[in-house]
Image (tube, rainbow, N blue to C red; front, side, top):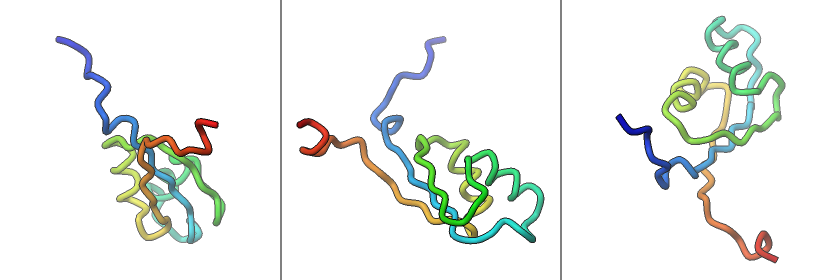
Amino acid sequence: MNPPSMSDSSTNQIVVTQVRSGIGAKPKARGALRALGLGKIGRSRTLPDRPEIRGMLRKVSHLITVQEVTGEVSDAETA
């Protein structure tokens, strides 16, 4: 069996920002925040767009905001 190939979807990134506190959230939601690298309001992380990350985002959707970033290169990055 061949390993999964690097497709275009693997280059997509997601920017996740915590907007609400995890205090009072269920333990699994707090664990998902920690696994995502969050923990304080206003903290952001850029993560790969993968199914396991999407599952954690679904668990804490009420505590975060999500922005998708495409893998396009801007003019400022090439200069």
